[in-house]
Image 1 (cartoon, rainbow, N blue to C red):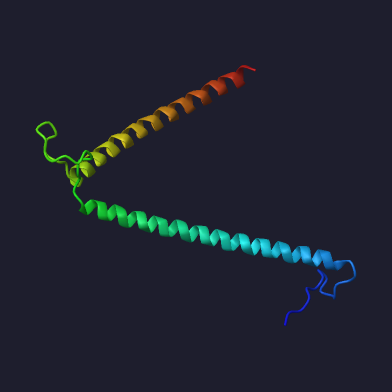
Image 2 (image 1 turned 45 degrees about the vertical axis):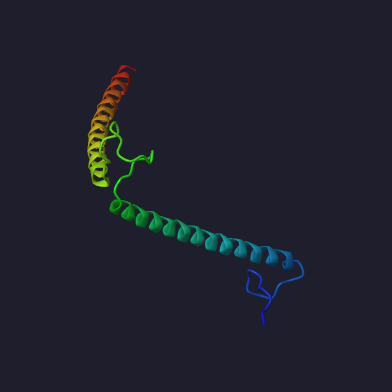
Length: 125
């Protein structure tokens, strides 16, 4: 058995409080629905991340196979394995991090130069 919602003052609703109380109940329901929806989306994202992690781990156990599906052609050479690809990816990532560090240093130098120019312009005025 449910009781009717109370007015904001804690007293029984007056003749004009009915639509306002229904609106407040609807807002609470909207907020609850939003919260439940957010939790559902977060759960889906978490489970999807788990699936991709499992697939990534499985992929490391499977050797690399050439995409054309042909057996060892004279021109194709021996198939490359996942460990070789991981090593190459690690090297590329290392180079990328170095380049990113260099770019960060350049941006810091430019920022300092701009600060110096702005300071000189401010002193001139």
